Image (cartoon, rainbow, N blue to C red; front, side, top):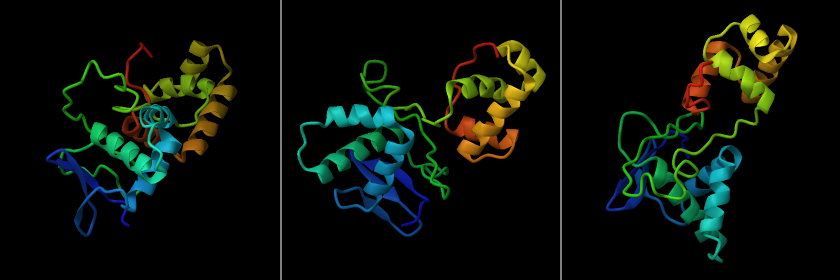
Length: 185
């Protein structure tokens, strides 16, 4: 199956289009496993909340279908020119109209979920400044670290997420919504 996918809803049913054809998402769809694995790896808080939501379901295949279906409906569903799942296997989230926006208990957990980059808290503090284009001397001063420690945090975090430059990191952070609020960095 191609990793280039666009998700969309028709009459409250979730469909997806890959390079070949459009299909309705169903319990037996091969894409269920792919998406479920991505949720488990990068959005563990969303998976935990959805597992709790569907805990009563005994059939594991149907439960996974419901989890994936809900995750996709909450984050995708508008046909546009940007693929929702690109060839690198990365999600491009959309702001989906939802009648429960502002009152849903799963908002910002399942809808617009937090990306788990496996970057340590110390690395994340440094990377917030990198994202805002601060130089390493400034970062070291602000965080009371040596420049060597700042460099190590950047090098280790870049290796963990598979980027090689500040430009790649900024693209990665933007795409995955790592820093959504400006806190004066």
